[in-house]
Image 1 (cartoon, rainbow, N blue to C red):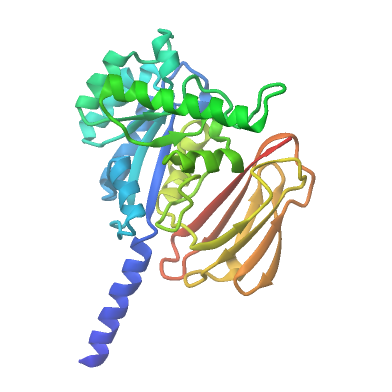
Image 2 (cartoon, rainbow, N blue to C red):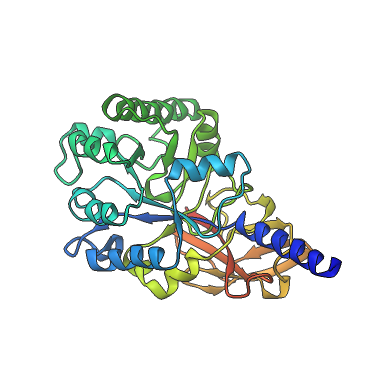
Length: 341
């Protein structure tokens, strides 16, 4: 009897440890058949995504509930997901919203208030956003007009840059609050790009920074660079997306690199883990457009990751995964974005 009780308690503890790392944030842009395929998904495929979530009993919750639970160290139910859209395109209202409403799924739209105020035709106006918010949508900050936040203007000092970006973020937040009445301090970085200075500023302002690099989230995530799994274009294939939806976040205790926006080429990354649910022999990293990364294990819990080749200038990533011991059909997933200068 005691042996059975021991195994029952052990099973529960193992289940809870996995549950705590099972949150995923999805990122979409367009739901359209006519706009650029790289950032688009058609209505039929989008419906298949939501049908998959429904069929497989995913816990789809608002982004604010997911983030609050992580911040408070709460254990989220297994297979928890939040759905987000960047830029606030009209097709989010015309195509995406009716499908989401049919499934009863909450979602967040990150918008650029200055573009809305300029009446740019490709984005929703405040009237449509207000209508969606009354139906449960969260409207949040994507900066004033989708600029590259980390780039300094010509002859701009660090202090001047900081003042300019601070004003941009706070202006956008105020306009959303004025028009929608919501004040969620979540900032989706335009183009998914951020550097150390920008992360520090976002944290200083009391915001959560959200990128476009892939990976699951947990209470141990860095809240100035939360990952999301892109689910449009090439990434809309359900067979690969299903693996990502069932992924977990590595328990990273220390992450060391010079900067995400860097002249170091090839870039170098060191990760220190708590390794209780994966074998280091099964840990692998891949460099976008290059292939498998070079791994050097410094000790049992720390690995140094580098690209075997010089990378092209612009955006690149290290994607690292390892299969779970407790759930062999699921993976731990971490992505490090780079902007090579």
